[in-house]
Image (cartoon, rainbow over all chains, first blue to last red; front, side, top):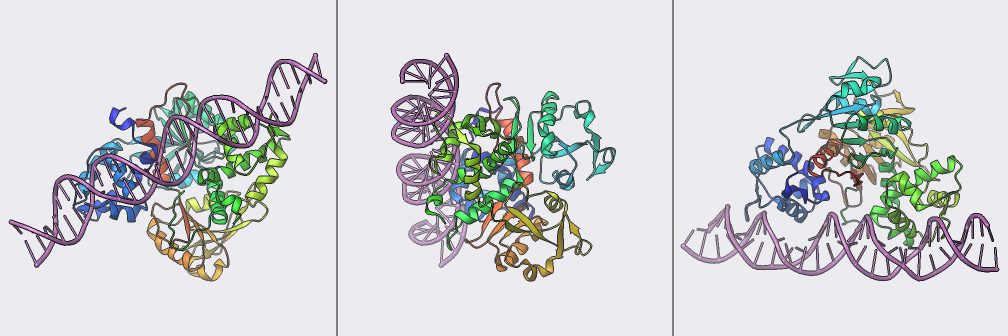
Length: 219
Length: 219
DNA sequence: CGGAAGTCGTTAAAGATTTCACATACTTCA
DNA sequence: TGAAGTATGTGAAATCTTTAACGACTTCCG
């Protein structure tokens, strides 16, 4: 929305939540200042990249000093909209869905799973991780104005559910199924494919041998 | 290992398992040929990118025809070492770990979780998804020559377990904990941070509004 | 107070990835 | 057989991302 923020590179945007979490940790530990070098060691991102990332938001630090933890944290809190909680729906209370529901997202986080849906009558009506499970048939009726969904259904059901979510007005989907779903261009989908992540790691291990002294992490 | 394959761009390497899976689907459906355009629609990757990706391995297609599914599939099977199964250990049989154990990775896949470890005595000795659960104390003893580990323990335990895995000779870790673990430079770590993925999606939704007609998927 | 040490913000360079656009060669079908 | 259609593989351009390097300013300490 903000003109300033529309031009933040995507690579930077994806690191922001990571920075935020570590700043939060530092703040909890009572640290008052932090340098890009220290942050770099903690989050495993090159310190020049961190300084560059921060610089997109203006001059947040002080030369010769570093960054004031409290200030930086409150800045990121605003930037990441940590003050308002984004309500999320979870579709598919299988193993993975249950893992999510038990994960305490609200801690350090601006997102909260408010409602879950499943097709299995035995699960409907129960509570998992403090979240009530509704029947998938009632999706449209009970979704309300929730705009983000986590999709942890069998892949054969993915596209069908995605279509219904789109019709119900969802604007973002975190898709954990192997299916690459099709959505209108005004809906954003991020895919996280566990099998592919594992295969990619194996491929890298076999074909990109790491040398002693060479540090390579992340994807 | 192969000189040819060492120079495949990382971005390409990460898409290979995705291509492989879709080719497998096509083959199962009895399709004989496929064009980069068709593949593009299915996996949501630009067709030029697909052609470029394939071209790193040589001329796999035929002009005016496309790609022969059978040939392409068998080529990728070799390239991705689909014939030999990589044995994997899973550490931490919580909700997320259980989800993994119940996920049938071996289907369409060259990886198999062979053993799981947990600190909870109640889980030790049981089987989850056909995989036996051992006590974390026996990690070094029972890991054998397994070289890849999935880390789904509480984040406070992550670094400690990672150190033990490294000592036990592991060479790759798929880390699902929020902790950014430190390892020697000859060990590869891929981080998948569920809370961050969700936050990043929310950030993109708020700050990178999609327009009708503009297609943006994936991260 | 003054010099040494530290650290940012940024310019510029390098590196990586995607995308365009088209010559080329194959396929198809009459 | 030949013309029309199709789709690859790739040179070149565009875009995005990371990294190095350093001037400028701050802090620290004797």
